[in-house]
Length: 286
Image 1 (spheres, rainbow, N blue to C red):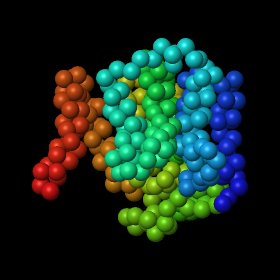
Image 2: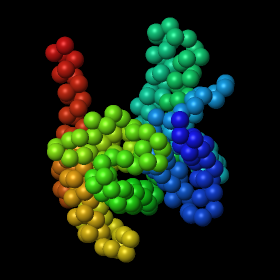
Image 3: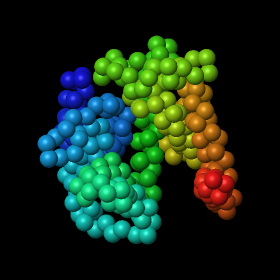
Image 4: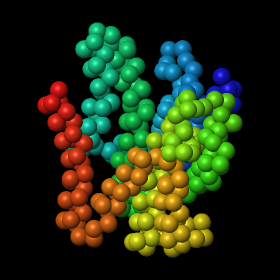
């Protein structure tokens, strides 16, 4: 196993704590969560005696929790769960209930519960506590957009050289190499687990770039007007050869483009009902 990959996983929470002294609160949290998701190695883990396996998700969760605690314990203590938090609570508790129902034991269930909390619960709570106002949500959107822009050179490298960055830096590919060949070319992954995940991420970045240009949310991004990235990111999305990204982008445009609130809400409701209806119909047919 690549020793550098292990080192960067262990060092990530410490590096993120150091960032706290250099940037504002929301940006430090974005570095911990978004930076870890976009940069840390896949398929690297090692056991800690008496603790969970330490992997990418654990490093990101610990980094986010450490930064949140350092930046302010008050907002975390004032947080009160609401009914909208119920799906995430169920999602985090489900491994414990599944373990009990399958007679795997309490310890196995607690381990799964802890893993779920670190991987999903911590980023969710950070979002609910520190990114709940319109101003902080704009900061979050800007952080995701900037991350997508910074990913462009890495994507172009993999389009030219094939998906190799993860192997060059961390010593191995995330998935079997034949799975990156798509539509007569390569489907880049950079440091994400799969080209499908990258396609979704660039689709989100494209939608945000269009929103920043359309609603004049920023005068400049990297000294350039948002219109430049509103054109460049969708072009990069096309080059990613990820059909899921194409669909996500088209659906996102359909939801976000209407200026009338009622029409936008109706589009969003229809989109949400599509997967629910599909699952329901599949259950009935089976």
